[in-house]
Structures are given as C-alpha cells and as structure tokens.
Image 1 (cartoon, rainbow, N blue to C red):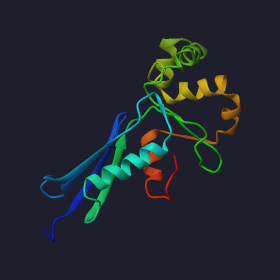
Image 2 (image 1 turned 120 degrees about the vertical axis):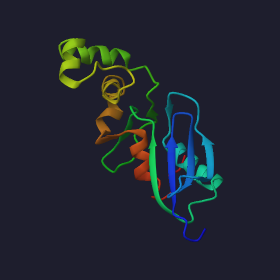
Image 3 (image 1 turned 135 degrees about the vertical axis):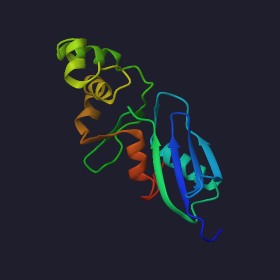
Image 4 (image 1 turned 90 degrees about the vertical axis):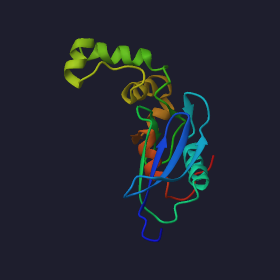
Length: 167
C-alpha cells in the first residue's frame, strides 16, 4: 500500500457533501465520507466548508492523497464584496424567486427566441444571472456591495483550504 497513489473526489451537491478516496491506478474505492447540508433554497456558504471538513474526516482524512477534485452544484449565486466576503446567504439553483427577473431579462434581450440565439439558452430562475438581477431589484443595499459572484462549487474550491469560515 506504500506505493498506492490516492486521489480524492468531492461532490458538494444541494443536499450533501460526499468525499471518495480511490486508488489512482485501479480506481478501487479505498474510503469515503458524507455530511449533509442544510435544507432550503438559500444557505450560508460556511455550511459547505463545515460539511466538507466533516465528510473528509468521515473518509479518514486526506493522508496519502496526491490529488483532489471538487465538483458540485452550480447555477447558484454567492455574492461577494470587494474583500471576497460573502454578502448574504447564497441562493441555490432551486431558488425560484428570480423567475420574474428571468422573464424580464428574456424580454429585454428580444424575447425567448432571441435570447436563445444570443446566449445559447432561454434564461430561467435557476441561472445565476437571473438571481443577480433579482438581487439588484430586491436587495439594493446588498447589490451595491457586490464586487464579484461565484458559483457554489467555485466558492468552495477557493475557500476549502483557507482559514476557517465561521457560521
């Protein structure tokens, strides 16, 4: 086992964070762990870091792991200020409060067919762009602080090895 090359895969979905550690040559599952995320359509991103830490511990840690990949939920909105701090709880893909914003954006771009032609898809409530428009329309103070936006899996990738994020 001393020569075994281990790789870790992380899936941070809407419901949970799963970690699998596999033999990098054979693909054999060596160990795994899981931790749940809070229910809902918006969540404090710090919960994702906590769940990742718990899932890693449940998988026996990362000792011997030579590579790690993080994938997971997208089309969410993690709004960040100029210092990279989270402004408000993240809106997840399944949060539909931006449905009216999606309709408005599609109309502003010339209708559904023209939107699809211009951007490759008709905009819907699950998309990050419509959530950002909802924020601009509904939470003007928070929107004024936005310097950047991350997808949930990108935010987790950038924050999983930094100092602990507090809930």
